[in-house]
Length: 354
DNA sequence: GGATCCTTCTTCTTCTTC
Image 1 (cartoon, rainbow, N blue to C red):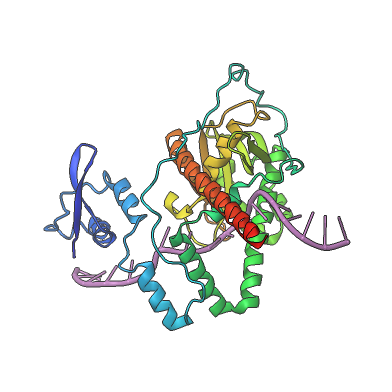
Image 2 (cartoon, chains in turn red, orange):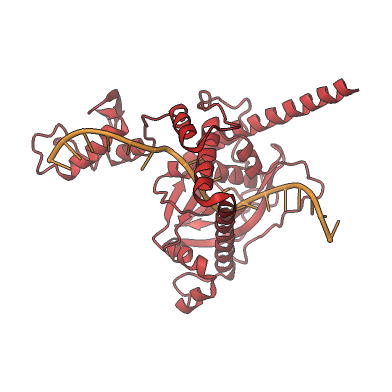
């Protein structure tokens, strides 16, 4: 089965763009090219189009939609009491105001020295209790589709583990994530590189973190000039705050870094859901926060695995960061709209009661 | 002292042919 969807231009050459199904066959065909001389793909340079294959594979088209899945799930798990109306987010909108990602000031280029211990600005909510956080904004502006799949996953997990078992499982995941972050921060603050670290010292980490540390060991070798760890960033104009995991140079490029633990492999950026938006939000806030006298244009998402297999590293170029910054601005606007509509409906209710 | 905050995670999967 081969479904020709449309034709796209790649590197000046016209090639067919196809569904995930035909692409699976495409890569399979590439592997057995020598045996399948008459294959329609025998003349295709698979190496040349590997990025296309990856990009199509990472945005697979499923024959099942949230609607059909919901019907199927109701048979298996019973009716959903408070089900969302599964639908995609409306066509990508444009932010009403395009706030700049970078914030160059006249005196800015007097950069901070890169030596010395990294900065850690502890969150102080005094005087800014109403400022929303990056996590909260992202959580409250998930697309109906994301909410649907998350709730479906949760329903399935509860069916498998029970309410109590699911609670324990979630707590275990959070605990591992926190321990991992704290272990990474320790090693970055101590200034030790992975290479000169005594292997015996890795056993000082809690057992549930050792695999994750091994997983990121190849990444730590390329991380240097750590400027901040677990540090609060506050965008005063856009009025949001958050805590950035790390700001450091990765292979010489200054990046906002987000460390993640994951049960499932996440080889493609698209597997990381809202993580790139989160990183862009932190970087944008940092660039507009007077506490930091430099600008961060790039991002890095490092996905670590418990079994110690090499972490996946997703580097976000300045172009990609700008793209996700735009997405962030849209999410921020959605959040503000929600907030004001809640506030006005609460006001109406209050007025009605009087 | 209790409550709340910021994080920590979790989603997208199915098909035919060799």
